Amino acid sequence: MNGIAEPVFDSAHAALTFAFLFSHQQYGRSPLAKLNDRAIGSGKGLVGFDGAAQAGMVLAEIERMERMERAVLVARYAQRVEPCPCCGADRPTVVWREAVEALATWCVPSGQSSLRVRRELVGKFFGIRVEFVALAERYGMNRKTVADHFAFICRRLREVEGSAQRNVDGALRMAGMVGEGWV
Image (cartoon, rainbow, N blue to C red):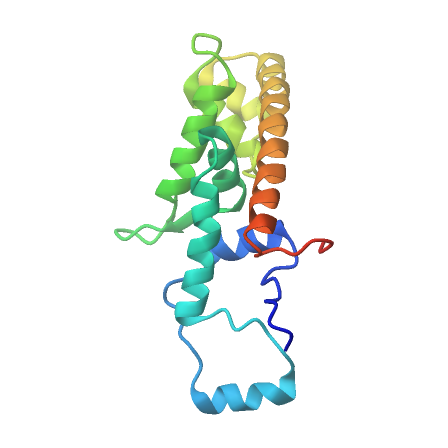
């Protein structure tokens, strides 16, 4: 070994995906399992405390970012749903719901549209299935108005997401978690 630490992640996307999906319930491997790893190849070994520490370092970089950039990264990478403790049905996670709420409030000035509609359209931008016709009927709006709002929201979110991705990539490279020239 040359004394220079190898970056842990191949890309900012990989680092963000890992950090937001890391489960504190992961356990480290036994010494016997680690000995068997030599035959398999070299992994990063990001389980247990090592994984928690690495996820924490990535999340700390995100926490230093501007509020809307942080919200857009949370909305893009955080776990969206979790089982409800009462009934077991899927419900939005608190962190994802708060990020979408902040973005919905920021995207379109108040008074321009219903906050509930904006929330659903922001969710659609991040992959939640939303039909314009159904949304328009549910809130008593014209389908074209809903589509126009979505186009406006998409422009604003693309801008802030592009900025957030560039900034987090730079921060993770500076911290040595993602190496130069790595994709």
